[in-house]
Amino acid sequence: MQEPNGAIYLHLICLGACILATAYHSVLYIYYRDKLLLHYVAYLACMCLFIFIRSDLNNFAFGDKLANDFTFYFNEGLQVFYFILYINFGAQAIEVPLNKKSFVYKGWVLLSMVLTIYALLVIVLHLNGIVLPVAFFLTIRIFIFAMSFTLLWRCFAMPVSTFQLWILSGCIYFFICGLMSFLSKGKSEINSKRI
Image (cartoon, rainbow, N blue to C red):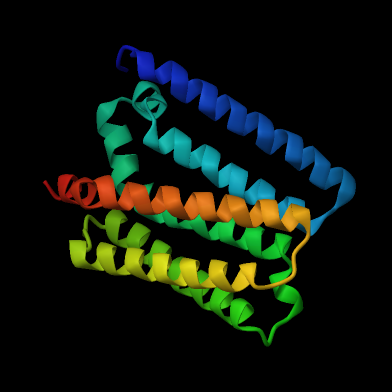
């Protein structure tokens, strides 16, 4: 077990806040039985797991070797599941499933299916010590950004309530942060995993 550093306290605060939000919304779901809350709880729970896997808490709890293995096995797949769950929450919040013939609904289903298959494939391959080429990582990211941008653009053309506008704004923020992360360190992170 390694000695804690300063970053671990920030990670602990973020993870604690996320766990509290998950617990709070779980109680709300149990009380109200609202499907939207269930999607949000699933997203928050996945975010808790992602924060733990990516943080120094993982290293502190399991040691460097096991933590590095967990990060290698689950980082990419969990990150994609985290994204899928947020997109599903957003789609439920703006009532995309109500119109199954719409472009947005069909795009949402396609995006969810492709990303779920990709995430499962990456986890299985990583558990077997196989790393996908960087080109595959870049291709899936380009697909994610293109589909997400198109779906967001089409969603803003739909009539939405103030709550739904906030959800769409959150989706845009998520999209921009993902794009910045990808452009700034995505490729170097994948290359470091191959060493």
